[in-house]
Length: 131
Image 1 (cartoon, helix red, strand yellow):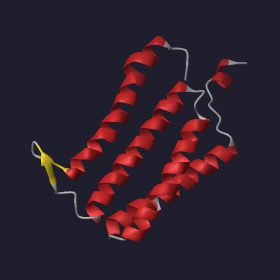
Image 2: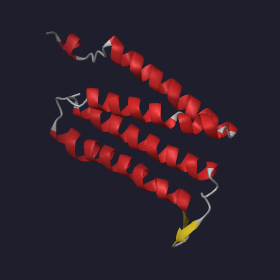
Image 3: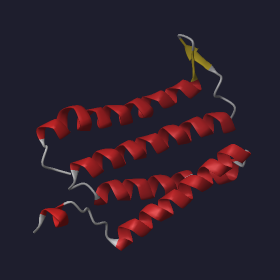
Image 4: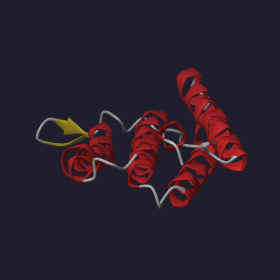
């Protein structure tokens, strides 16, 4: 295999189609949030999360892809939680220390950052030849 062939990462078409569908679900979820269509935003959480988890599972053999896809999954969960707090008007409810219910979304956001931090700070420098 030549170096040029090794520089490519090919995604099977069925995986690419699923990723594209995932984007459609995600956009509809965010349109529902933006427009205040509670039924649309909430109904798109499940398909968006399921496809995100399936994508992460399918890429589990490639650490770079797995870490990024898990980070995306927890990002979607944080985003969905935040959306729901606004839909159900509990985003401003205090939980202590100057924080509100909405701020609980930081838990999965930070989890995603920790996963990417692990990849970029610890894993990638020790596996320079990998994608």
